[in-house]
Length: 511
Image (cartoon, rainbow, N blue to C red; front, side, top):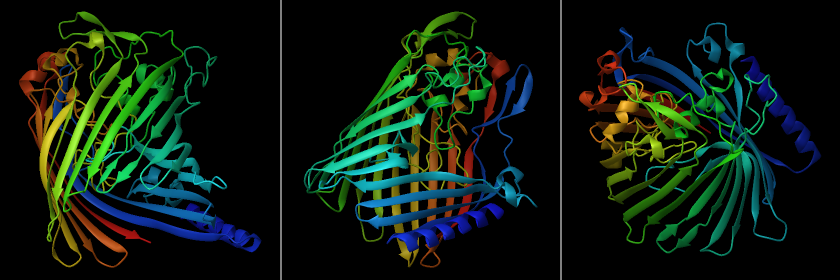
């Protein structure tokens, strides 16, 4: 509470000082969220390692949390404004470190989520945004599988006419974080930047919107060092709850000896992504969305992949792959039925030529509400989907309404795998397929594996600014035990799987 009061007092002083000096309009908006959830997000019930039986997850089934976001806009004119966006929480009730415990009110962290200025280039139609901002690469049909997050950078856009525009982006997700513990810090913060450069061309016509885009990345050889070398503990915490390069930019989850990657002669590696999202509303009430993506990550050193029989295979850290996803909907008076589907490339079973799964930076796939984050996943988020190495098909009816102010969305989706079963013999354990749990990436599914997901989301508007959201999810676990017993450790690394489920209610007050 002390920090909250300090924040509000500072905002008040800011209002008083600025309004007296110039004609600046200040606008405040934000959102309080109160969430209560019961569920089991781990796909693994128990597993056996070195003869010891261990639970797959020690999380509490029941969780209560809250979050506050406050945005202040200082508007000088249509050509100039500044925005600061604070987040207080997420606060787990009863947790001292997050400020939710008895007497721990002073420990609650106030986090700067965004801070940027918007300005228009004089005498032109060009607009610029500079600072920490929300960036989502163009996408339709299931959210961005590559990058959707807050990041520091510069965005510039220009509208040539009503049909054609251009957006350029430079973002710096990582820099000056590397700790060289093995060389007495002589290379502290050296060659550890990750810079992204993107061009987007939005094309809008009657009933059709297409936005081709491409993004190039420069990856310093130390930028992800904590993820390549487990001995450098100072940098293992790279990434956030909304995207973790540990699994989306490294070759494989749970891969034996992946922590022993050799040195590279390259100071920088290259990364590249491209996309083509197409939205067609020409035949309204029919809506068609198609999204095509490709991604590439240059290999930065080789490693020895160890088979389950103990033999080694010299392997590459290169990673590249593609993804296609689509959604078809038809609007009716009582709801919007639709079908959805996707297909992503998977590993071919030979780590010598790298991984064939598409890499990503901060994926936020949202076709579904449990394995993805298509609803209010902040209260209990276990995955953030990149779709890599999976395929799926589903059906949904969204925004069904039979009573005033009450809406429902029902969805069922089948998840399959596109990774070769031959990859299993290189995995560290028989439950490595579940390593994406709480690491914000897709489960590792082979062609023998499957998951079936059910979602029911209900939204009720209590008042104009207060909404109650009730979500019920269930995932049937169809992983193939016989396939994964071929992993390193054999029966000693065996596991017992379990279905996943979640029931949560969230109250959202927006102003």
